[in-house]
Amino acid sequence: MKRVAILGASNKKTRYSRMAQELLVENGYDVVPISHREENVLGVKTCRTVGEVTGKIDTLTVYVNPKHLAGYVDEIAQADIRRVIFNPGTETEPLEKQIRDSGKFVLEACTLVLLKTGQFDKS
Image (cartoon, rainbow, N blue to C red; front, side):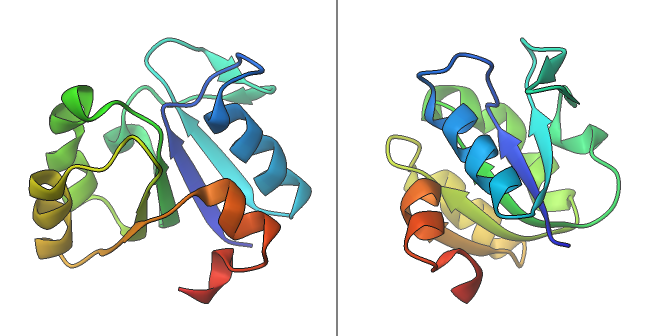
């Protein structure tokens, strides 16, 4: 089972990160929510930072405003992550380049669309 970490996880029903977590779980993924605000999301204990996640992460899907993302870049670059998805509204070329330069596959896409169209595992 592939592990997917959600940076910016939330319990708010209107947040795309929560919708993504629900859909990922429905599709059989092991989900690790990352949030500095929530203790758990949908009953899953959160990590406060990317660095707290233990083990390999296949995909990190980002739902954090770019102005807050800079503080996570070093952790993302150092973590055992294969792919990072920047969802709409999170894109920021300088930070994406830094992450790409650390050897990770970087993709600008909507996790929800990728899941609903069967393309999530194709990149």
